[in-house]
Amino acid sequence: IFQYLIIEHWAEAKLGIILNILVLILSIFSFGNFKFLQRIRQETNLLLSLNSSNKNTISEGDIKALPLPVKNWLRKSGMVGSPFINKGKITQKVKMQMQPEQKGWVFGTAIQHTTTDKPGFIWSVHVKLNKILSFRGRDKFENGKGEMLVKINSLINVVNEKGPKIDEGALQRYLGEIVWFPSLALSPFISWEAIDEFSAKAIMNYEGTQGTGTFYFNKNGLITQFKALRFKDNTTTSKRIEWTIDIQEHKAFDSSIQVPSKITSTWKLNNINWTWLQLEVLDLKYNEEN
Picture 1: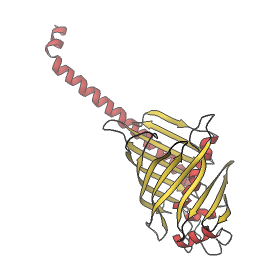
Picture 2: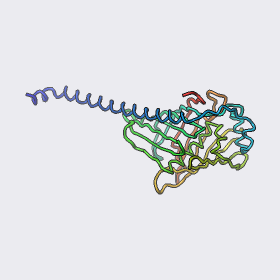
Picture 3: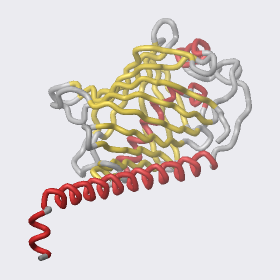
Picture 4: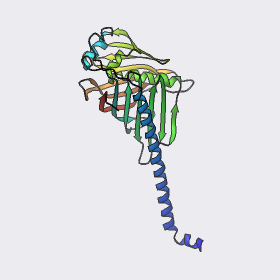
């Protein structure tokens, strides 16, 4: 009888099974998403809690030892005469190419929290690959150490990397993001070397990790590019290759400070310049309470 009932009502039973499976899958995805976001919140709260507040206003005296193009940039951007930036929150819209040969782009949104007293950042991104698949990623730099984590549908690890090469790369990314936090040019962990009237080299040492990069400026005093030799991979054979941030537009957000609003990020590979990221800043907040 049981077998007969199953056969007789198989269409209804099959539909119920499919619906139950879909509900289960959606529940698993929802739980994975909740756990990932909870982790981001906990890490962000910890990062921000360790950052102290410097309420000083940047003056001409503070920038006198810097190379000329860096001084001109701090004046032009509006940083001179403004309060020191202790922390910031950047909301971003992103377009990514995950591989050099990829056709088209995937789209997502990202949020970054950055601290300057104790240098660090947490960048979390959510990208939809199709109607079913997405990924969440988190890059972190804290206490001189970097981490990269990417999970498909917030559940399955596809990237989970640590180590000295990741540390150096995360520090260089932090260094390049001076473009959004101009008072970082005065950080005790960053030293400068003059190159010419339109460029200067920055060297950052923090908690045993070191990285360098060169900033380029236009005749109006604004930053146009950051360039560094950086590890693209975390393998034993990976070598430093040229990585650039190119700036298309500047904008003032909730302050009078002019910062980049649109950038691209490019790896200079052997036979191609792989622009893997196009980024637009949607919002930028400085020194807000948690």
